[in-house]
Image 1 (cartoon, rainbow, N blue to C red):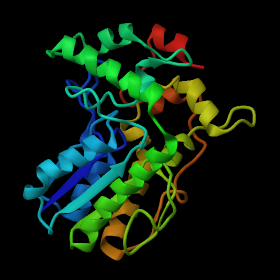
Image 2 (cartoon, one colour; image 1 turned 90 degrees about the vertical axis):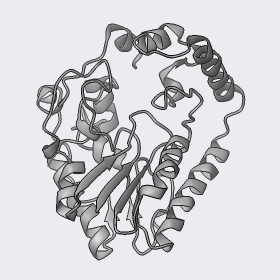
Image 3 (tube, rainbow, N blue to C red; image 1 turned 180 degrees about the vertical axis):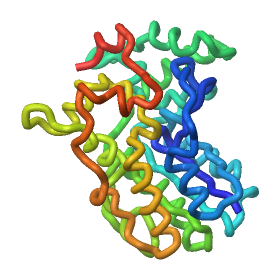
Length: 283
């Protein structure tokens, strides 16, 4: 019996070698993915999450593995932002257009592309063409309403496997739908992004997101963007949804308002910090 996880960075257990930025080795037993595997009694964890990836890549990887997935297995699908698209074939982690397109100008940040692909053995000419195609889609074609419909279609696709007898739970990374849209048999409220952002203590009565941006400058070194104390809470919630069909409430029961600028290093698991270029481009 296995636990399969598909998703973006909210599902990843990032390790050295997966990114040139990561050097510190952590104990995987501290985090929700391995803890849930053990609590469910699964013999193996198959984690196909990719940081920075998109719904189309998540669905593609699931379809690739489907013949190897048993109805005795447990499956988690983390649904990322529907606006992401997998245009760059060799880089399924480069689907968030804001990573490599300068706004409001709409120009490609080619220096950023070079910096983040220099270590890869890929066809750079093909890469450049695909990057330009992604930019053209983002600037000239992308439509928010169609993206929401696309996200709904992907959620419905995975819900269909629940009706076929697969032990599958859909988990929203970002809250876009109603509580009934995600799973059959129990309601789902909130999203993982809420858990992540609300760990930060508001600064001068501003919202937690402002604190998150100011403290991390968009470079988040928490495993799965969540601190260890909330990994434990998340494990219990997912377990109870699998076993007891309890509502998956991602908007209540988590620890909030404890990360500050002074104690950020304590929670920055991978000791990641923004580069000078990133500091210049963050608000």
